[in-house]
Image 1: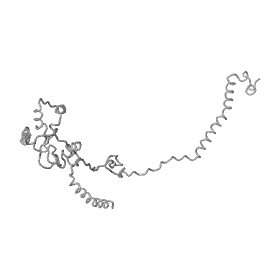
Image 2: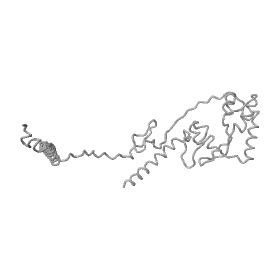
Image 3: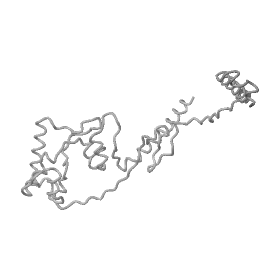
Length: 256
């Protein structure tokens, strides 16, 4: 007789169903201590974690405040001041000295030009049509209206390629006479005030890229460039020096 029979009796005495039930209870009882042990370990582990102080989160060091009003570097003609706040180049003046050597081909005096009468006719027609005013017509205008040769200057007529002009402007000249007439016609003429023609903002004294910006200048803003004769440059520098103490005084008052 086995040990199960000693504990519970034989299957004949208690029956097979009862024997099976008792065996299941015996197995359950033998496993219970293991479960309790596992539960005890889990509880102990939780208790240890609860007693252990929580790790502190790393707090990043405060960053120094950026001085957005300070420039990134000192201004110079080749390296203008750049704003730290926006990264944009700040408004500045840059002196540009230009020495131009012009090459003028041989030509007849203006009054002896056989096509000069066309120039005078164009001027008279513009006046009759109420168009005798500077085509720019903005707050920089000054002086009387004058006719400017837009594409080809009179003194350069004998030094330009007619075919290149036709290709660029969509024109067609049958003869050189046609070209000469066109050069003194409204197609090659525009009205500019003295200021925009040959004086302070003149097309004849300011480099082309800068003068084109003057052609489309927005009223109320500063000019892209201005012409200053050499004999006036010293006066301008003196005026700038006279303004500096006033600027420093204003800065001190603002600081207070």
